[in-house]
Amino acid sequence: MALMLPRGAVREYLAIYGVVAIYVAALPAGAFVSCSRDLLHSLLALRRRWLALQITCAYWVKDKTDARLICREVNASLSRGDDGLLVATARTAQRKVENVAAHMGIALTEHDTVLARARTAVAYIEQRIAQAQAAGELAWFNSAYRAWRLEAKQQGRGMSYAEARARLRQNIFRQILTNEVQTGPHHIFPPLPGIDFPVPE
Image: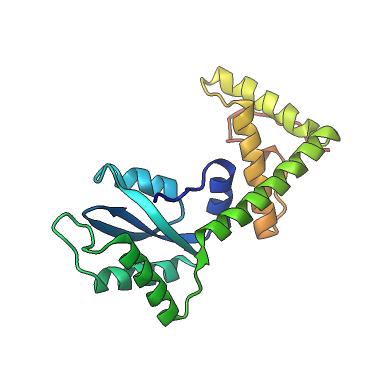
């Protein structure tokens, strides 16, 4: 069964959070094991070669080095066919990932657990943005968006308000996850020559 992959704000949050997925993808002919920070992007790339491929399982780890170590060991211990896929079922590859991680002492977090945590974090941040909007605390953001849009239009560029809000959300993600305070339009909007943003109050 295909896995539910992170999309939208949840996908953004996980990318900024920096965790890495070790995933198993499968066709009837075999399995594929690799790691990724963005499962949807990886799936789309893999489907250029194997059109019907589905990601069936994923575990998340904190460190890309650990993810690569596990993938390298799993791929080295299973036979590979001429088509580049592992000669194993998705379930066999999944058990191998679990066993290799346990042997290496690397903790795996279930995909559903990570998705649930990310959704909770996104909902909290969306609520904060809505509260700030209602309280008039985003007046600086709206002014900056208007200024950026006017200047960008003259240069043949553009951005919808929804895209601008997504950039604001990503900025808040980074602040929460890194404890770095980076507010203001210069941390949200792409640079444009000649732009003069309103100063946040």
